[in-house]
Length: 443
Ligand code: NDP
Image 1 (cartoon, rainbow, N blue to C red):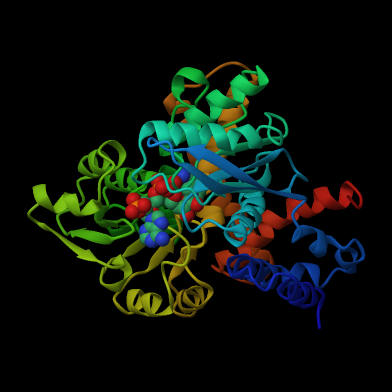
Image 2: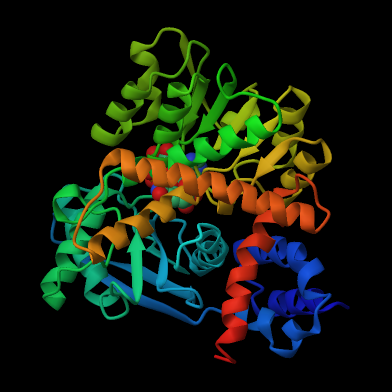
């Protein structure tokens, strides 16, 4: 058994109840085999064993009171996975499905994603099984305050800087930040995704979706294709999906779908992105509302990947939404590129199908890194007590995404894995973290 196989097998034995974490670790460790199995220094330093074990994981209760005076208790998490190259950085997810396995998979992926940005940020993730859907603003505020009452002990501008994720948008970040300031008496960049009036960065809201489209554009250009005129299918209708649709449309693509957790909309005339913003960001309603004012659109319950036909797929909702049967259908109906906006939206069987059928595939740790990269730019602006214009941040974001693409491509070429960006992104992300861990001794 090779070194990477042994570590993976021990990991599976130790964490039998963490399927999402094992799924993410399997993908990464299998990709790293050509590096770590051919150089004994890594095994001697126990590097993989240290890499797959979080530096620290915190679980705590979050008691809060609803508008009727009823007490609720949710569970809070922060997994600080790896700080070899910088302070911990990663979002907070608020969704009923949140558990330790999901937070660990997200935190583990975050290590490599953050490294790929080229910026000095370590990997972490957190969240709670609280569901903001259907709660009043006051209930969300009381929950966020209760969450921060415990979390503030473990975070700080140079220590751990959380951000948004599913269910955590500008409103939640604002409440969390207010409570941190109240508890510590410090005005510092402890969270990113803040409002513009208290340290937020222009273009952070747009960054993950825009970054996804910038890297997709570069991928297509590098393969003799053009995003202008391409038929693009998007899933999700949250932060990532909305700004991916906006940028793809600006660049001349036709975006024909979006979805939420109940169903999906297909509009062959092109999705009206402003209407989606109104429904999801402002009215906080279901995406089914879209068809009321758009007669060319159809709404169906279920997964958009069961039906949509496209050139380019941008899954932007959640993990494991594209499975093997979806991947086969997409590639058989002409889809030639899949770039992940969400984290791990494609399961490992589906990735195999895409790679076998020569569908260009970029994993989320590379293609959705624009969000965290711009968060790091927000940290930079906070620490120099200054702010940059939208165009300055957007230009830096575009440069970072193009860099990630060529960095990954270089790793693919070096390890004889042409166009296998799963291998390329994992190796490129790993090398910097591994060098830092080797230099810092056994810690
Ligand atoms: P949002 O909460 O803004 O939106 C999530 C969207 O996905 C909503 O449309 C939601 O539908 C849908 N969704 C959530 N869970 C499910 C599910 N189980 N099945 C089907 N649809 C679902 O989150 P974001 O847009 O911020 O995040 C989307 C993905 O992108 C996540 O994987 C996140 O980790 C990843 N990501 C986000 C970054 C960011 O900067 N925001 C950065 C990097 C990655 P509904 O409205 O019904 O809940």
